Image (cartoon, rainbow, N blue to C red; front, side, top):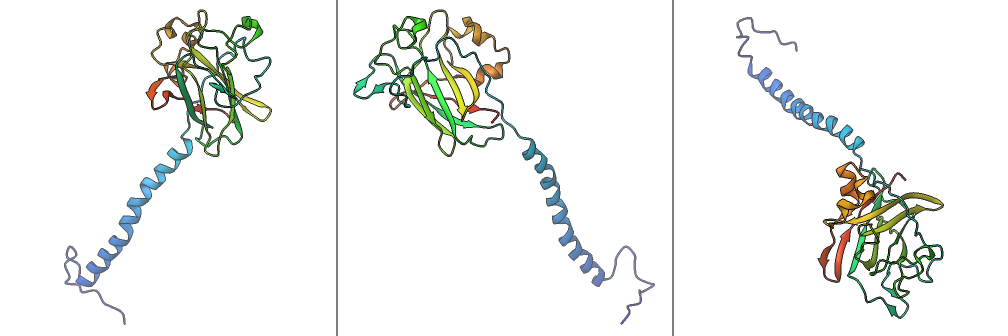
Length: 226
């Protein structure tokens, strides 16, 4: 049956059957429109989010020529030999790409001088304490995590305290850099640390060494272009 409009109806006060229909349509349409707006804008923000690459630094002259027999993640212990000098510390973090995904198969290496400032290297006179492993290597886990036991780095010659870090993936070297101690007075005098002009680059490789349950603790997250 066709409904004939009432010519006497007030256009500003529509009949109840139309009012109810319009209200129902409003209830269906408006929430969908409101929800569509944030979803539309949130998409591009997620797609373009990236992390800052960890800045590269010089390898230096003392990458080991001959690796120690023990190259695990504990630089304070070689078999039954335990290194008793320096301040014990743990250095840990995650290795990710710029999107925040763990880098599968990444291998993290560190090397540094002993508590007296000597490298385990013939170029430094082979004066390093043999009880200090001086070099460690570990493959990250499924979440990209790594951890080393070592000593808080000390100054070497005119250099501020630092730990050398290299990240490999198979035959590729993804990054070579150096890790610095936040707040160390030698940083401002160090030519490589000062060579990083961008404060964000300095902050990325300069971390606090804070007291923890088993010595000092340092968190160093690494972002590479995998």
